[in-house]
Image (cartoon, rainbow, N blue to C red; front, side):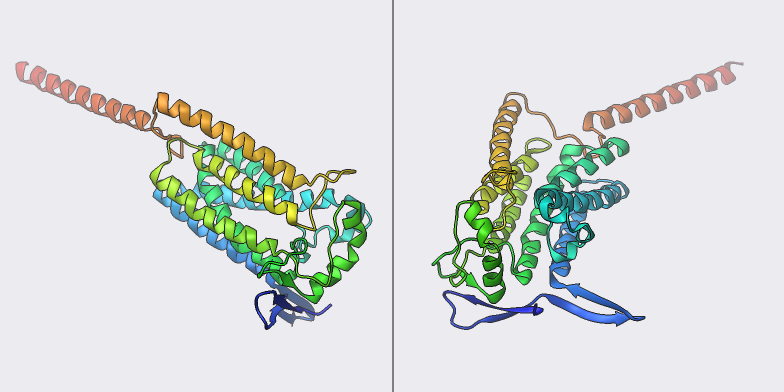
Length: 333
């Protein structure tokens, strides 16, 4: 297969040559190929980390602890994303075990990554005495940056597209057409059809725009209307869940619950929206009835700091009194 695709959009007359390989070279006789898919995801990850680091500094969070969360969270996010995808397509990977580690070819499920990363972050927060919910508020804003940029990796691979559309931004390429023709039997089994000669929804683009817009919305909420730890994480669940519930229904490459036509990510997204909405409403009502300051990210609560400062002051005062009494005793003697 060619390392590039000529992509056409319905509303644009000319085609765009989109490469899938960024660099191809040899070192000491070893052939190395760097794909745009991996490079774009890495770039999105880097921007997400830089934003998270900036927020951690602003919130006076220990960068040493932040690095621990970043390392373990990243490792288990990648593992979780790949395992989620592999187990959902076990009929294929069970017979091609050697392909399971080949994440550079695509096949990372975002929900698996979120589950793996959050689980690892929870353990690290417990060990390092960090406020997990405050950390999630930073992480979910960062995640939207990574998702919004990373989806363009799907574009270079010409994957994560949808069913046919006659909209002006409908997309078509030979790679897309070939993929559609290979999967006609699967489409029929799941109850829909796709014509390989017609444009399709660029669903990767929908999610990219929604995630980047969501970052600005959540950041604004964080700056202007954040009332409690975990509020931004709940807003993320609602924002991203709404998009995924709708867009997942357009995609042709969805993962399904075994033996059904129910799309895993669509069902999970709908449930996430309901759960996060209910929790957000309940917690905002609780805050309205009994407003409380937001906990410190390292569990150093404001009241605790004041108590420690007062204790130090009292100890200093007692020391001064004792010193004065000793001086008086010396003078009397």
